[in-house]
Image (cartoon, rainbow, N blue to C red; front, side, top):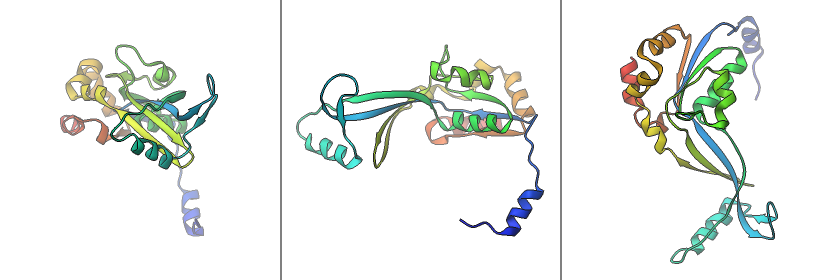
Amino acid sequence: MQVSNKVIEELKQKSFNPSGMNSVVGLDGFVDKIVTPVDKRHGLQRNFDAIETIDALGSRISAAAGKSANIELFPRFDKLGGNGPIMANAHVSLGLAVRYVGALGHPLIDPVFEEFARKTNAISLANPGITTALEFKDGKLMLGNTSSLEEIDFSRIIEIAGEGAFIDMLAKAELVSIVNWTMIPKMTSILLEIV
């Protein structure tokens, strides 16, 4: 991609200093469980052949039609996920003072989010969703469990954050990012209450 000299000059003249700016981000949160589908096992732990492509997994599933099948998912690692936490981490990296409101574990913060929750002075409303991410050479399949996100609504936010504190948090923010509308079933009603 080429960028014109005029655009480069304009960007050089613009200043962006987010230091001291406040950001509020929410409302999702996912634990991403990264797994490898096993084709053939040869022993314990990582001693197996992986199902290497999505097409190969599809063929294996199709072959099970009318029968049954068991496909082992070998756990590799868990990590922070969700559009909100990822965006909030980006804001933190830019130097914004971030408050996060979302699904990080309730009543206790899930261990995947502990450091993130400290960095963002987070308010957790519910347990996180769970994404089981099957990784292949040719892509990734993400299988989601979002049932815990059904708990998130405006009354839950007010119950946990406090009405005055929540309104004050929003009023002091130069940037408010409410993301992942498709995964938060009551998002429309939440936004209607806020505005």
